[in-house]
Amino acid sequence: MARDWGELFITGDGAAARLHEAEEQPDRRRGFFRRLRENMSKTRVALQAEVQATLFEGELDEETWERLEEALIMADVGAPTTAKVVAQLEQEAQEGGLSGGEQLTRRLTELLAEIARTGEDKIDLRHEPTVILTVGVNGTGKTTTIGKLAWHLNNELGKRVVLGAADTYRAAATEQLEQWAQRAGVEIVTGRHGSDPGAVAYDAIAQGRSRGADVVIVDTAGRLHTQDDLMAELSKVRRVIAKQLPDAPHETLLTVDATTGQNGLRQAKLFSDAVDVDGIVLTKLDGTAKGGIALAIASELKIPVKLIGIGEALEDLRPFDPDDFARALLT
Ligand SMILES: Nc1nc2c(ncn2[C@@H]2O[C@H](COP(=O)(O)OP(=O)(O)OP(=O)(O)O)[C@@H](O)[C@H]2O)c(=O)[nH]1
Ligand SMILES: [Mg+2]
Image (cartoon, rainbow, N blue to C red):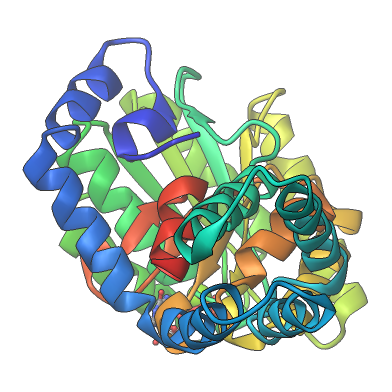
């Protein structure tokens, strides 16, 4: 699984490998983890108290496992995922392979990380250009994610990026993306308010192709009159993109707001039924005690979580590493 940006991206020119090497430096690695752990503190504080109380104190009995299950479910790890993980831990404890709170916690961390590992979690940038489409309910963080992603692609990988402002529905949406384009130092293609989103996506890819861009990222609206309208529009945008470039979009990223908990899981299911979703961007993990939702999404929907948002700063969008994530939650 991708531990850093260099591992998240596949590039044909060695740029990702060089970035990975820089990110692998122990100082940087520790810095990333510290920030992840700090920004995830709401979930960690809630979960750790219970884990301490169950795994470290007294006998391991029926009540221990029930309490541990409750704690994980409270953190939105989800009932099916929780049941699987706790049953496995209980079995291993009974077979005598594990003893003491520390060993149990370490094993619990491993089991949670394992369950969060699913599918292809990398983003292949070897297309010319690679087209990334972002979808998701309004306010979940699509535009912000695009801005941060574009920044990393341009500033750390040296990729030439064009943004397509295909959210023509909300008046201020284009302006918001324009600001991000400026911050990230990338180009942007816009359309008039109310104009056809498919046309903007089409033009963005056309411009990307003519300028020799490496990546085109298309923003979309999160709200329309009805959910059916929204899904129909997304399908149309995809069709129009494919007209410009037959195998595009190469990557469809769905943003989910972690603070919406199990509702976010339902949204993810709805979207992935309507459009092919290649990966999830789980945002606002810093604002919730229910960060376990990342594990529920990965294990129940079998869609890899590729990126997580742990704050509003540029460096607060991170590739999702299940091991680091589980460690940040429990230790
Ligand atoms: N704390 C925190 N805030 C975030 C994170 N990601 C996004 N946000 C904030 O969430 C708000 C909504 O983000 P947008 O990027 O505008 O969401 P959107 O999906 O584009 O919304 P629409 O364009 O209305 O569909 C903004 O205020 C962001 O700063 C995160 O990881 N942590
Ligand atoms: Mg937006």
